[in-house]
Image (cartoon, rainbow, N blue to C red; front, top):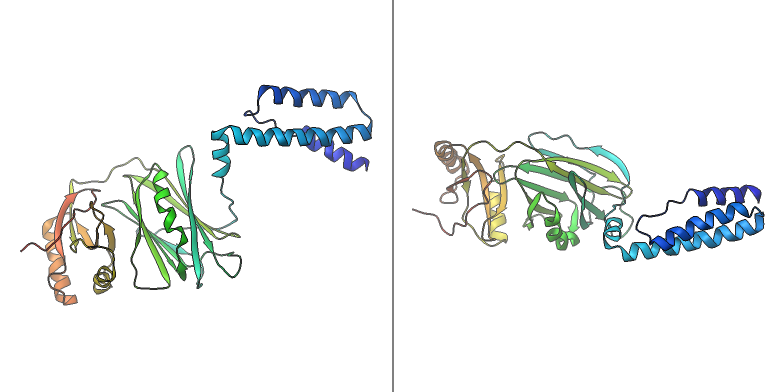
Length: 311
């Protein structure tokens, strides 16, 4: 009993008084500590300790609910599990996780830190607690700066509603889902601001992927790029089929244009000559005609909206 009392007293003495509590609440707690020191009776002290601890809890709760900034910071704290790995990128691409099926990417949240932002992806399974992240890939590309996230074994994407939330990050311009013809995978793009550095960590128990973004400092080189791309169209099966036709090329990606339509890009180049050379190679090796056009745009610029192939 004496040892239990000592532990309770020690725990009470170690309570930190939140700055957000009112002046009267803080003074009340301090007076309580002085009172406890003057009354050494174990029974009275134990009873009093429990009463004051309850008072502190009530005051703390009031403080959280009456100070918006404090309450908001508490809500944004993610519950991270055990670190599995820090991804090592090769040419802007890296992946992790384990092969699974029936996974749901059920929410995505943003945590703003002093010099960086964290995008937190959470994995869930309707049948059991999701301990490990499903197989995934994160790819970073430029012009415009884009992060493409693919999750395999995912039959559901409940977090699609959270993509708009990602714009709360100071490093995110846009975020949008991508059509995929694979019914066991989900994809989405995050359009980034210029010169963003990144780090990706995978966690387990619970299964999460945390993408940290921060200022990079340097700027993209050059004035313009020449993009090989399809015309703009709504997201749908035709867009997915155009992407499938170019399967095997290294730099194929799906993007949203300045008007909210979509396109498939088969790479971008520093000169028009390089772009036209690659276009001829694709026509010869892939047997496609009139699928791609060359678009000149500024470095890091969102693609223009092109409705038809110019003759």
